[in-house]
Length: 225
Image (cartoon, rainbow, N blue to C red; front, side, top):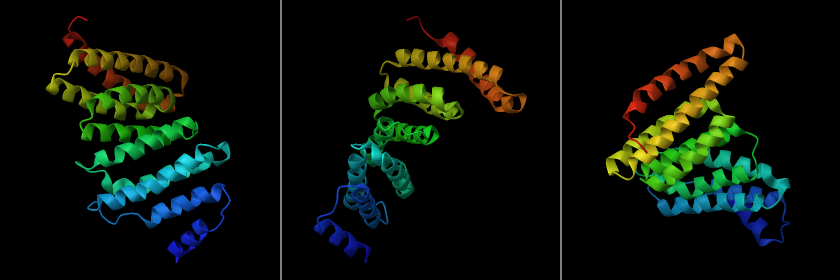
């Protein structure tokens, strides 16, 4: 019945308003694959969500649809977050992250969550160049807006470092970059700890201790630039 209603809607002279974006989202949900075995169906499902997002980003009145689409999309693709399949999510998840940045979505914690998952997808797909470039962007955003998630991101950056070292693709320049980022993060945590109440400091202090010890341990291993 839902499919019939959507067909009638698109066959008619429908107004170009928020309901067009909602119709795309409904189509996407109707085409949700039941398993990860049918890649063609997955791509068709993703296409409708991308149509909704592309439509919404062109009019500020419909920016809320970008957020709605990102939440629905993420709920429906969670089953695809498994080794060997994450590469299929990269094009669509990249577009969603970019759209949320473009529309300046105020839920910065949500944006950080998707950024972290996108970096995980890059790593799973062995897209090391993309992972390195994106990790820098994500680090700047998360450090400034969602510092509680920085430790999670940093663990992925260390994983990226290990992979780069194993591939021998300019490890030391990347090592320097990560150490510099870590040092800046420790300084920012210390500043935050000085500006919040005692009841809020416990988690911050633990994070400072962990990251500072990591910094002290690895810095002597750095070769000269």
